[in-house]
Image 1: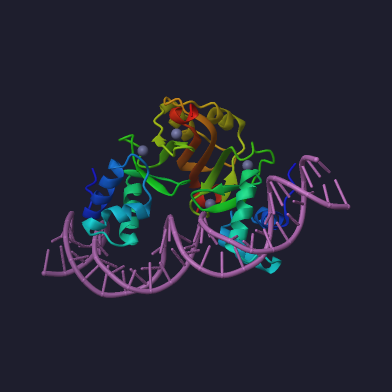
Image 2: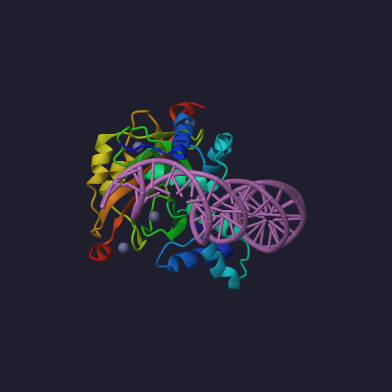
Length: 129
Length: 129
DNA sequence: TACATAGTGTTATATTATAACATTTAAATT
DNA sequence: AATTTAAATGTTATAATATAACACTATGTA
Ligand SMILES: [Zn+2]
Ligand SMILES: [Zn+2]
Ligand SMILES: [Zn+2]
Ligand SMILES: [Zn+2]
């Protein structure tokens, strides 16, 4: 198991506590009191945390969320649902889906090592509005 | 069928001719001789072209590619394969995949109207290197 | 014509991300 | 423990991506 460095731990903690995906500069603003002052310090920690699978980047939102699957296959296979009204993001943990996608072969014969899937729609709360 | 405006047509043409996804500022550079001088002119055309499904955004690359499916369901269901070595991007047109994903229901009861899937790996050429 | 809608042109600015370099800390090897 | 190596940090500057605000123009349609 990976031991996080000081900056990595600070930045992981704030993302993990957040109920919603956090953007890099919002993270920066929130950790300045802890001595992290520059964007690069944040981005370096984010890169590492993504690499080891502790967080994921929501590409369509340029935001970061803590892994909810505890044993995500080291960030290699990610799926999210995103509410386009309230922007709630949830990591999908569905073995049928992950099996289907992990075994997917395309015509071009490409060998996939990783995928990212983002579903968009309305969450339960927002449908009824 | 949608008629493109002047700027939309110029920008679609250059993306459509490109063998690889194009970034906004690269598009801007390439259309300046045609009188399009400001980022916003490019981004507005891109927004519209994405909306009507003529192009798609590759979110992980901040780049834009012409739709290869001719009848993409108006940009609501997109899947791409991306070579992490040569950066070749291909739109996947696979009815089994699109059926599976269009019918996917998650536990949270979210209603999906759209998805974007990006597979990463090595293309045939790059595997053998 | 009158009205509404979509598109354009322009300047300025916001947001997201990386380059380069010096230094420090932690871990591995001898 | 001392040496070596890899990983992480601190800092300044800058690159790359994207939007706000406002005035104006073209297009469709009642
Ligand atoms: Zn995860
Ligand atoms: Zn919602
Ligand atoms: Zn398409
Ligand atoms: Zn390749």
